[in-house]
Every structure is written in C-alpha cells, then in structure tokens.
Length: 575
Image (cartoon, rainbow, N blue to C red; front, side, top):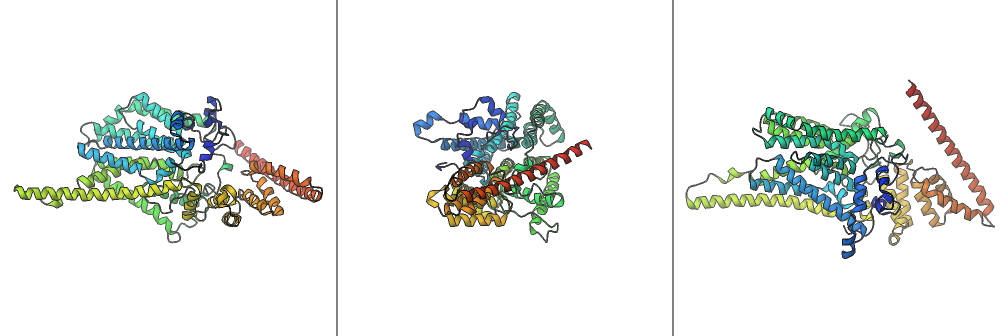
C-alpha cells in the first residue's frame, strides 16, 4: 500500500473537488450525490449511490495515528481497504465452520484456516483491496457476510443488508445468496440433517428473517426506481469501457455468454484473458458467428453449461447434503447477474465484479482442501497392526502422508500469494498497471490512451512525445469513434509546435461530450492569445471563425437528433 501517487479512480477520492469525501460538503449531500460527488439526478451521473462507502473515506482517515506515524492520506485509505478485506476473509472462515458443522474440532479449524486463506489470497480481490477507490465491492461483501448468519440478532441482520446496499449497488444481487446461506446454516444446525422435512422446518423458522431481508432489498429497489436512479444514461456507457452494451439479438446473447464465462473462470482461479484493469474495446472480440467451429471461444460457455448439468445430476443422486452445497455455489455465482447482458452496466469484464462469487468458491474449496489433507488417501497406509513396531511404523507413514499433502496445499497457497503480491505491486503505480493491462489487452483503446498521457508529460521523467503519439495512433486505429483521443492529440501537438494540427484536434475535442469541459478553457485561452497578435491575428481570427461554424453545425445536428429521438419516444408512449 506504499505507492506515492493516486492510481486511476483514486484521484477522484483524493481531489479537493470531491467535497463529500473531503468533508467540506454538508452531510446531507453525501446522500444526494453519487460516488463521484455528482448529484444523482444529474445527466452526467453513473447512478453509483454508495453513501456508506463515501462516509468511510470521510471518517476513517485515522488522522491522529497518521500524524503519529507520518502516514499520508492515500496510505491510510489503502490500509483501511486491507483491514476490510482481512475482516471479510475472517468472516468467510467463520461461516465455513457454520456451513459444515459436522466436522471435528481439528478438521473444522483446518477448514476455517484454508477457507480464509483462499479468500484472502484470491487474485481477483487485488483490484478491490490495493486500489482505494474500489472499496465499495469488498465492503459490501464484508457486511453481507454478517447477514448470512441466522444466529445474529434480527436487527443486526437488517442493518447488515442495508449497509451492503448503501456500500455498493451490486449488493442487491447478493441477497438471494444470503438467503440460501442462512437457510443451509440453520438446517445443518438441527437434527436430523439429511431430510427434506428438516430443511422445510428450518426455512419456516427463518420466515421473519426472510421477510426483513427481502423487505430491505425491495425498499431499496423501489426507492431507486421512484427517483429514476436505477439505470445509467446511455450516453455514459462507452464502447471503450463496455463494447457490448449496444449489441442486440443473438450477437448480444452469445457475446455475453463469453463475458459471463470469463467471470466464472476468474472466480475459479482460471483467467483465459489475463489480468487487466480494463477489458474494453477491443480486448475481447464480440461473437459474430453462432457456429462454435467458427469461434472456438464458444466451447467455453458450452462446456460450462454441460458441466453444470452433469454436476447437478450427480449432486442430486449423492443426496441432499451434497446438493445443498452445489445450490450454495450456484446462489453465489448468480451474483454475476450484472454481467449476464440482461441489464445495463457501465463495464464489461472486471475483477471486482467476481468478488462476491469467490465467497462460495472459498467455502467449498476450503472444505475440499481440508478433506484432502485429513481424509484423502487415509487407507493407502495399510491396515493398522496390533504389534507395537508395526503400529508405530503405520503411524509414522500416516503422519508423513499428511505432511506431504499439507506441503502440496501450502505450495498452492504460496503460488496464489506470489501472484497476488505481483499484481498488487502493479496496482501501486499507473505505469506498471497500464503496461500489464496492455500485455493482456494490447487492443484496449482506453489503456493505449491512458499510457500515452504518461509519455506526453504526466510523468516528466518519462516524457517522450514520439512514443505518446504512437499510442494515440493505435487508439484511432482500434476505435475511430473514441473522441477522447482528440484532446490528447491536441496536448501533444501544441508541445511539438504544430499549431494548425493542434487547432483541428482541439475543435474536435470541444465537440466530444467527454472532453468538452477540459477543452473549453484551453480553447478560450488559446484563441484570445493568437487573435491578439498584431502580425498573424487576422489570419487566426479567420481560422477561429471557421472552427466556430464547424462546432455550431455539430451542435445543431446533435440537437436535431435529440429532438427526433424525443418525438419517437413520445409516439411510443402514446401508443
């Protein structure tokens, strides 16, 4: 957590302009604004309502400890993330002992430790833990873990679910998994455990808890719907970040099966694409053919579906105990619903989205590893003997076999730690993070644009205009419609002294809604300066007039397009 500079969205947390986080805005504004400090009813808001997470930044600055130990604020924010993640890992370990209560004390402690380690060392958690701005996702999982325990006070359960929803809007998809988890725990606390009637009895006893949890979720959903803050405006979803949102029909369905498969793979420690902070356009190509032989990637979701069917049948035949374990797994995998293509989201593939699904993977994985160490192969040492020397030899062989299995498991956990340590180090600096992203996604337009900023002056010691422009040309080749690139081209051209190219790019940047705010002051300052020149001012004024006409025409065309869309919408409403 020792990186000196904010990385990516951490700059929004650290900036003085985010008054909700800085504490300079009234407290009620935290509840009216989105995560980035914009009013929720603003057309520019992504509708990410996370007031509890904002308050955690506002209040958990540990100022007295920071002064004592000379910690900077960014370090504290990242440290709080680490503590939240460690708490979540501990809670997952506790829940594992409740989900599998029939194990002895030694096995239970071993399973709890392994479950905790699998969760703590899961590579997909690095993004949420190492980067302070991604706190909402791990904070929501932490508080939802509390709600999973059917033995906690009903009021605490209600507060935990509410806190999860106020931490991250995606927590609403964890509610079904919470209900399934608390049911399994309650059922396995009773006797007998293996009958359907005892499960029904456990469910009936949890009806008040079901009602509270579902009521909190419905209240949250209905409230967001009434205030029209559920859906991200179409104009804010961009191909550079989510290239699939505009797809329709079979093309959309098949492409999102790949997206969903990728997140499932991440949850199970299999990442076919590789680590990247952005998987936007054109990192993962959309599916254009239904035939698997035309696009071999389709064998991945086909294999997952077939495997799920086989596992479901096997679990049903194995009995209710095994089937409920599988049901628990499916319930937490269902938290990946936001990337299934049925709802509108601003991103396509992201490690942070997979974090809740790793809850069940860690539970079942911890139980499997504990069984491997303490149960697997116990019969390979041969029958016990009543003769003293033979009994001692058998005991030694059993212990050696257990030690060997333990070493194998620890080696696996060590490999996870090495991967997590390396990935966390990459998240400490923008350069290493972008370089790793381009290694996995060389055709990511946004990553190429971001790294060009580093070489165009963001990092003075890395200043290389030729290199910056080479990345910008790649961006335009990948996505000609990515209008953010014009502002960056303008920034490079003015450093080169190519003023005519600068003027053209600045004009295009001003017509881009995503760079308009940053380009307007530069536009005003530049033309005020060059038109005042006694020698070339007249020619500059003519060029300025030409560009103004281009801008006015673009504004008029956009206005006509919006009016046409509004008329069509009104006609549909009338029908």
